Image (cartoon, rainbow, N blue to C red):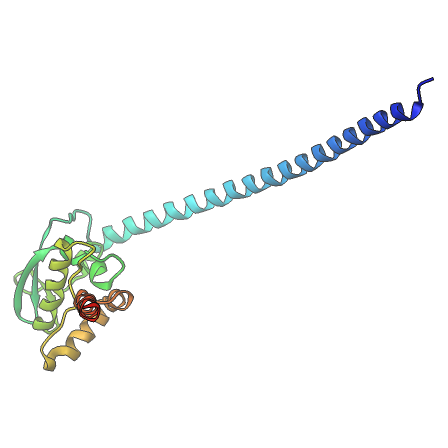
Length: 197
């Protein structure tokens, strides 16, 4: 006579498996509900962000309409009167480093708000020698490779404080604090090479 114990064990195993499957299905359903709720929340936040982005775009357009900048191009030639000295450059040179005050000034958003001299040049009441050093840096950075950036602009000793003040005013000091100047990198590499000889 066969024993009933193995049948019961098989049946108990099937019942346990079924219970585990039901529990797993409940867990999966709960996780799915959580994910669906999270997706709904993300969609709502995405819609809110889209609305904020549209509002910012409209505000930017309104500011451009109020302050100029409706018809600006990176290739625009910008004529400056820097402390009495005439300087001509391009908009893309002055706006090379986004997020700086210099880039914001010449982005075109404030075109009609910039002070001009009687010849229509944008007037900047800053030291022309120091500003030219900044402009030279921008021009070199525009053509330099990222592996070999130009060094921080320097000026004669009597103008170094003026240059430092202009770099700060135009929002350019952070870029020199983040990475060492190319000249410093070159000097360090030369020092390491000499030490290895």
